[in-house]
Amino acid sequence: MKPDIHPQYRPVVFTDPSAEFSFLTRSTVDAKETIEWEDGNTYPLVKVEISSASHPFFTGQMKIVDTAGRVERFERRYGRRKKAGEGAE
Image 1 (cartoon, rainbow, N blue to C red):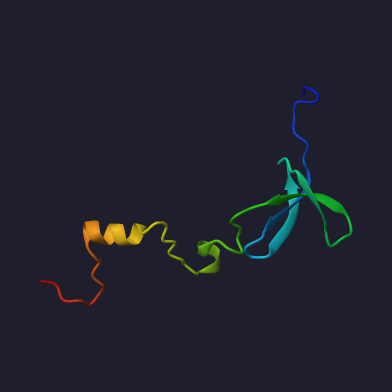
Image 2 (cartoon, rainbow, N blue to C red):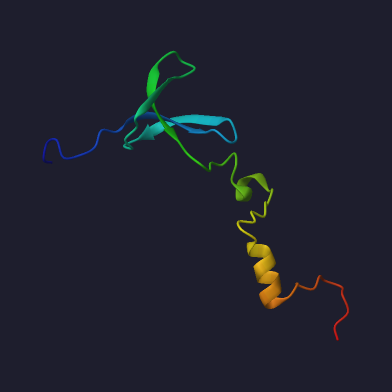
């Protein structure tokens, strides 16, 4: 192997601020911040927007995020969906 062409593979802490969830794993990702972990050592810190603690697939909680009225525009364009059990005409 050629020397000095591979990124450094080291322990890194990933944190999801919205779920107050952090975990320590190994990665090659670049990090600008550091954090002192539970074991007293300092590790690079990477903040993520979604993790297993906040993703609807893992939590079982679906959220409808309505950005600038997307749901209303969809309903105006295509009409409201009929729920199961409503009479068909």
